[in-house]
Image 1 (tube, helix red, strand yellow):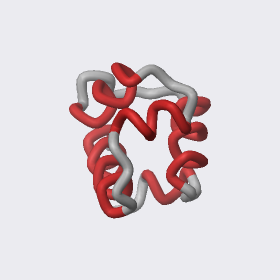
Image 2 (cartoon, one colour):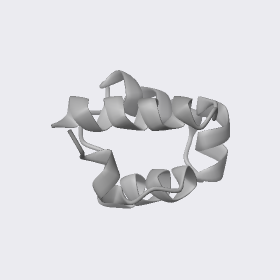
Image 3 (cartoon, one colour):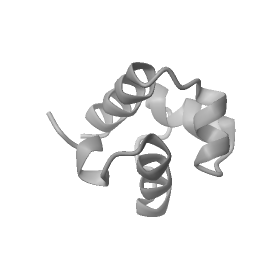
Image 4 (cartoon, helix red, strand yellow):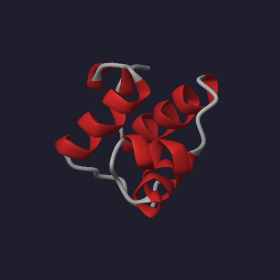
Length: 67
């Protein structure tokens, strides 16, 4: 499950042409947090963190969990 979320965040971000740095700023999260989530180092981000990322990417939280 966590890998799916990590993959989806990375894919959506890249599809929209957003850098990890820009995503971190728009989501008001540390760059390190974004990197750790995308690489799977932080496999269980909080709901609040996922909500911030989803909002910054312009998608719903549900989109982050899609297969």
